[in-house]
Length: 211
Ligand code: B1M
Image 1 (spheres, rainbow, N blue to C red):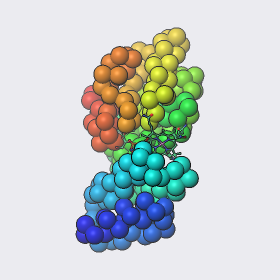
Image 2 (cartoon, rainbow, N blue to C red; image 1 turned 45 degrees about the vertical axis):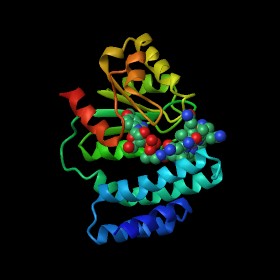
Image 3 (spheres, rainbow, N blue to C red; image 1 turned 30 degrees about the vertical axis):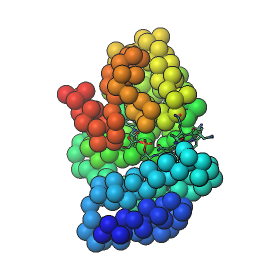
Image 4 (cartoon, helix red, strand yellow; image 1 turned 30 degrees about the horizontal axis):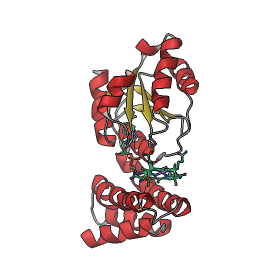
């Protein structure tokens, strides 16, 4: 089985999205769990991509191909990660903050939260503070979840919280934040309610906040 994961990671690295999609289906057919495939195949592959992107071995066009391959695998897993017959346990607005186009992690968080029975309003990427504010008003959400993958876009999380305060609705929603450069210390500094390090923790955190 580990060989299969190695091949999946390699195909993801090479941007072979059809192969990644097919390998994800095969792994499921062979009885592997969706979470196992996600962690040991797709996310592990993307970690190698991140390492080589940082060291300058991979460039943006290549990383985009890797992201496309990751999405192909994630789409196969989506129904399983989001499987739930439960009634809605609360409404969550999700978005990647303004200036930031990374959406793989945010999409994963969205799938896991859907799987746990929450309603998700996904605002996508490059979401401005005023868009979060408008969505809270329009959707009557319980929680806002913001994702940032760039150190340069993290301050926008604070701007969103400020915008919520200025709109007089900060006390109507809880705010959770996440993304690779984000920390619990940062969450505390900007007045977010909570930080979640990964998609699984985001589900636990949301549950805790809504109890
Ligand atoms: Co970008 N990129 N990128 N990139 N990219 C990073 C983030 C970087 C760390 C790479 C590196 O240098 N090692 C670096 C940021 C450095 C920094 O700020 N400190 C970087 C950079 C610099 C850039 C550009 C500026 C490059 C350039 O143009 N010179 C540029 C910026 C574009 C922009 O956003 N304006 C850029 C562009 C891109 C692509 C478009 C090519 C592509 C994004 C494609 C897409 O998302 N559709 C891309 C990618 C793929 C990456 C890496 C390689 C992978 C990110 C990823 O998807 N990881 C990344 C390197 C890395 O992270 N190691 C990198 C997999 C994903 C499952 O994990 O997103 O961490 P992650 O999500 C996790 C947790 O963080 C958490 O849960 C998720 C699942 O467990 N989480 C939350 C995330 N959001 C959460 C929200 C929550 C809770 C938990 O609550 C609401």
